[in-house]
Length: 200
Image 1 (cartoon, rainbow, N blue to C red):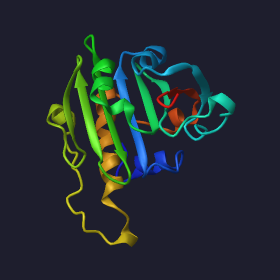
Image 2: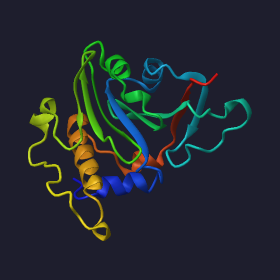
Image 3: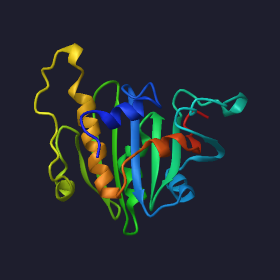
């Protein structure tokens, strides 16, 4: 199990803009294709890339607009994992509801602009928790034994930020829900990138 800020550092090593805009949602029992369909992506924009390679390979009409979502979707054992690095569409109530409908679950995290860190949990089409990440969601409390969010936020700059510890704790919690933590292998593997079109 990761501790401190290990999982945050792992993600940041694959996506340099992690601190500024990021969303991730795990969806129970869904394939990559079904996840993409429920997220209403533009299927013709599909390309195979890693998280680190997410911004590469665009050209001509494929270039995302400023208001388009960029999403990477991959299989995550018996779940799917969708990561969005431009906008936060995948954590909207409608998307979380769609990803968890028909008896499923969806759990995720997201933030934008160095703030607004939130954690989400949806069950069978209903969003049951949409909370600041500083707290453990009540609906996930049974999975959170031994986990605590940072208690001290007044930390000198040269000692890092409790935000990274908070994100790592949330990722550990989500790993308990899904049965697997995000890891080097998933991040090194190519998955399917899509655009969520809004600008054309």
